Structures are given as C-alpha cells and as structure tokens.
Image 1: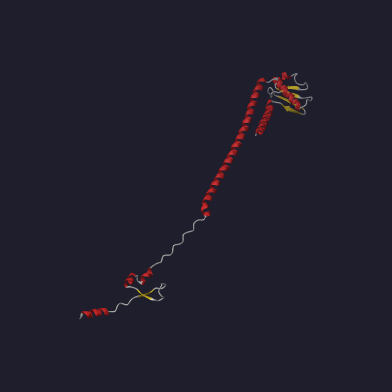
Image 2: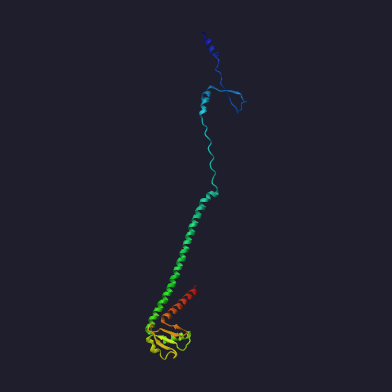
Amino acid sequence: MHPLEKFTRKAAVAPPPATTTTFRGSVLSPGEPVSLPPWVRLLAPPPDALEDVVVAAPSPPPPPPPSPEQIAAPFKAKIAELEAQLAAERAWMAAAAQKVDADLQRFESNTRALIVDMALVAARVFVGETVSVEAVTNAVGKAIENLPLTPGMTLRVAAANAEALKGKVPDTLKIVVDPTLKPGDCRLDSESGGVDARLEVRAHELRQRLLATLLDGRGDAE
C-alpha cells in the first residue's frame, strides 16, 4: 500500500459522536445543546451514582437569647430567699429580746421583794430584842384610831407586856394575857369587831406598802 493511501484512510475515519448536554438556567438559550470534551465526561459521576446520595437536613436555627426578665429571675429568687431568712432571724431576735426583758423584770421584782423581806427580817430581830411598852402602846393607839373605844373592849397582849401596859392604856380597855401572842403583838377586840396588831400582820402591811412604794418609784423612773 502506498504510504499516502494509508494516511488518507486514517483521515477518513469518522470521529466519535460528540456527547451533548443541555444546561438550563445559564446564559445559553433554553434547550441549546453544548458539546463537552471527553475529559469532562470522565470526571462526571454516572447518573445512577446520585441515587444513593442523602441530602442532610438543614440545621435548626439557634435559640433566641434570654430576655432580661429570664436573666434576672434567679437573682430575684435568691434575694427573696435571703429576705425570708432575714425576716425569720429578726423575728427570733425580737422574741429573744422580749424573753430577756421579761426575765429582767421578773428578776427585778424578785430582787425588790427579797430586799423588803430581808429588811423585815432584820426589823423583827431588832424588835424581838428591844421590844418595849412604847411599841405596844403605839400599836394600840393606831388600833383605836380604826376602832373607837367602846365599853367591853379587850386588849390581848403577850405575858411579857401585860404588867408594863397597866396604867399606860385607857382604863376602858381590859388587858388580857394571850399565850398565842409574842412580845410586841396585840389584838383589840370589841363587840363591833376587832383589830389585829400582831407583828406578822403589821410586817405584812409594811411589806405591801414598801413594795408599792418601790414599784411607784420604778414607774416614775421610767
């Protein structure tokens, strides 16, 4: 074969048909075929390979930022809790202060009563050692002020004071020794009533007057 003939035959071989692909939405006219070079066809995946591709769902939008009220809510709750604790502590302190004040008042009253009782004990010891007829006559005089003299009145005294009282009390009084009475005691009896002037009774009255005086002085000081 002539060399030129061989070359002519190669040139006469028809080229392979071009693959055409249609692009839509491009600058080309709709439906206009475009020839792609062979290397593009080699890089492109086969059509059946796209069937197994799973398109991921879009990510959800991020949550909105918290509002100022939501940010302040835990702080308000903590403040309310602390205020409740503070109120409870204040109530406890107020109750404790009231109890302490009541205890102090009771202690003060007991102390005042104890002072009066000690003074009366000392007075009784003093009277018991230095009892005199004047003390009894003074008691009789005060008793007569509350109970006017009437016929038949009786003055009951201790045996230690009976003889010394004769001539120092009104003659209308009948002096009678009463073994139940102590030196310094006396009791005035009449048909209309009587007056108990024993030392215990007078001490009790004195105690009440002293306590009343102390309490009045405390009220004035306040």
